[in-house]
Picture (cartoon, rainbow, N blue to C red):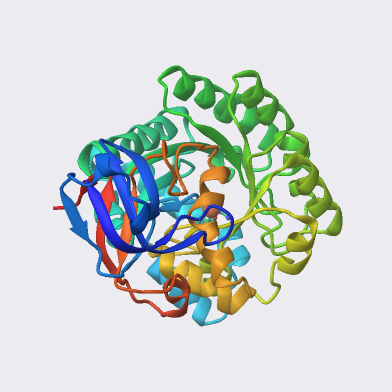
Length: 397
Ligand code: NIG
Ligand code: FE
């Protein structure tokens, strides 16, 4: 396939804009990109799709979601509007644990069926790769069930799925006050079992006063690394627990949330090459007031990614373009940083070298937008200007 007359944002070196560009695809890979005038003769006979000046970007990558889960938490949304806080609801047994109850009661088929409409919305907003975490099962069997359901998504819909083991998401009621026993008896055994089934691409945890401390997570991260699995961490979302520095010490691919990130944490992430994943949907939903230290991250050269954090509690958000808009308006990212954050930098947060930019040899996952400048994707609020999507070299039907 040959795309012609595109306004191309290759996302190599910033936007990497090429006007009146062509992109030649060979099966599921990009074969050539450049100005129309330079198109080699060999590609001129390929079946042509005229983009008529439309913006073409890499397919969007959502590098942090909890898209597989049962039920919803609209009642907590109402409770928060009446004054309860996210942490209070969690301590009273609601929050993550109410989704755990629903997820334990669901079958693998039910989890898959309830996730598909959400994934469909993400695809309709431009996603071609989606990370999905476990973390609402909190038993060996229920964590495996979530990861198996997540892996089945890519057999049902045209999207790549990356799966993350997040058994250390919350302490289930049967382990109240016994975080270390939970890690030893459930989190680590479920990691071994899931890895044995080939269900784990990375290992994540929630580091917070209402979840786990760095010390409690040490053995889990050591185990992950012994299995050759990269780690990442939910850290400094509601308070500074020095999770970022801990994760960086384990060579983390990313540390996510980061509202309360300290200068020390920034330094550790910069020297480890850890990506900062910012999640403005959770900040917005929980009406947080402490903004992540974007200017300091930028100054330290920490690469930033942007994700939806799609989950039933703190971020019921399925649109990456809306996450980009929030990242700009709430956190003052530039539209260029926001688009890098859902393409090239999101790929880095997942350890994927074969996507996130438009360049020969990389995957042919592309979005064609009803837009002519890449900043339009961040600028519109709640719009989905997707004109067409190409996944693995083929246009969606
Ligand atoms: O990324 N912070 C912890 N985990 C999720 C929230 C999950 C939930 O509330 O169900 C997050 O925001
Ligand atoms: Fe999350």
